[in-house]
Amino acid sequence: MHLQWTELIIFTVLFLAVSVMGFVAARWRRPTDMLHLNEWGLGGRGFGSWVSWFLIGGDLYTAYTFIAVPGLVFGAGAMGFFAMPYTVVAYPIVFLFLIRLWSVSKQHGFVTPADFVRSRFQSPTLALLIAITGIVATMPYIALQLVGIEAVLKSMGLVGNGWAANLPIIIAFAILAAYTYQSGLRAPALIAFVKDFLIYLVIIVAAIYIPAKLGGWGTVFDSADKALTAKGGSMLLGPNNQLQYVTLALGSALALFLYPHSVTGVLASRSRNVIKRNMSALPAYSFLLGIIALLGYMALAAHIDPKTPQGKPDTSAVVPQLFDKMFPDWFTGIAFAAVGIGALVPAAIMSIAAANLFTRNIYKEYIKKDATARHEATVSKVASLVVKVGAVAVILLISPQFSIDLQLIGGVIILQTLPSVAIGVFTRWFHKGALITGWVAGMGSGLLMLYFTPSPDGSRAHFGGNSFPLANLGLDTKFTLYPGFLSIAINLIVVVIVTLILKAAKVADGGDGTKELDFFVDTDDENPPEEKAEPLVETSST
Image (cartoon, rainbow, N blue to C red; front, side, top):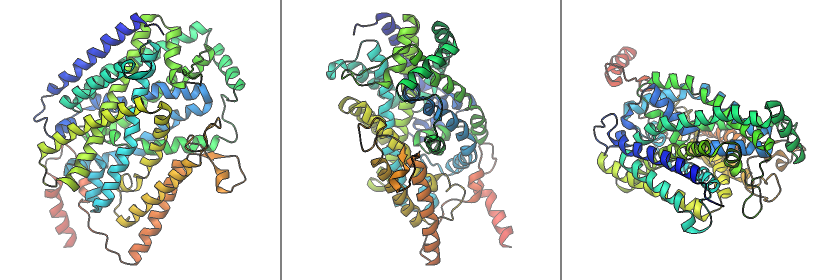
């Protein structure tokens, strides 16, 4: 493929501009000490409504979203729109959970979800499981941001085979690693403004310009319907995949804010009110997501036929090839820059979140218990570099399809932290032993269901997607469902039953390092909860 020089120059200029912003971010908002996890890993916990909206939005709506959602619509039709309801229902579901988690984390200085679990349930083992789960679920997600960058680089004629051909990807992530190491969470927070502006610009232009060139929305939908019907897909859900659609949407909504990088963006907020405003305003991104999904139908109408060098369908190339075909070169360069920059923000936050989990809940807990705040920050900065190197190695050495499969597994995995983290902020009733047992049951059943899930085209018998056939359970039906939904149900049932058994047997459950008032702390409080709690305790006891 020949180099597309106009596209490449515009892409490079915008990419370098945001990279400069990443380095400048180290001095943004006058950090007190970047060698402290509160500053490096959480931006000083001082981001207001606008910064948090862009940061969390940039964290959740990634380059992979830009590439994968239209790709799924292109290949499967209606099923690809599951992302719409799941991002709509997610925010009301997590509204109360997140403000309580923010408050208790603010009060106790928690940096990760596992920090909270360690204090709430007084169990290093449970905290370790939560930390490992978060890291394992996040790693393939970081690698998948590279899939977005790789897709646009291929369309510009840059990526081929071998290390030299993949040098642009390596350079891009080296720059990302450098400014993240220096600026921490402030870098993606500042870049998120540019990233979101570019994505909104590109998608709104695409929604108007591309259908007009194709003959209008009526032509787009008619052509897409014919193309999907020809390959066995449909623009409507069939009787056998409606349960799959519902459980996938609900399961994904429950998992969205359990990912460590999502929690990191929330903990960086200034106050409870900032979180409340953002949970109310973030659904605006769902409108954008709906238009992004429609790019899949536009690609079908434009007769895009993406193939790998081996001649197999390549859905990751759907959007880049659509833009390359429909837009003039100069605007294609802007569109590709939006996708590339869209990978930088979430990749930076994810690497920081994974590094914080390693530092706080593995390194400090089991390797160096007396680590100082500066030592923690140094270890976390180095760990973030290791995470990025691992992500680049995955994308260069392993098939991108394998990374996508790992990300699907990641959703099932991270759901198993729901009882300890999301429900744990509301109640301490669960026994810590039951939570560990439930985690094992949910994780085991989830992975087992994924193992027995074939790919839709029949090319793989195992780990082929997220549509588990209920016929595998001995049921006479063609219905499928999301394995994560069933596995978290098993997890919760086991947790409740084992808790009842252990409490009846009077098995010791340890203490609770938190107080009820900790879950209502806000930035505007004049007195810390400890000072308020004592009179209430005395009055109650009296």
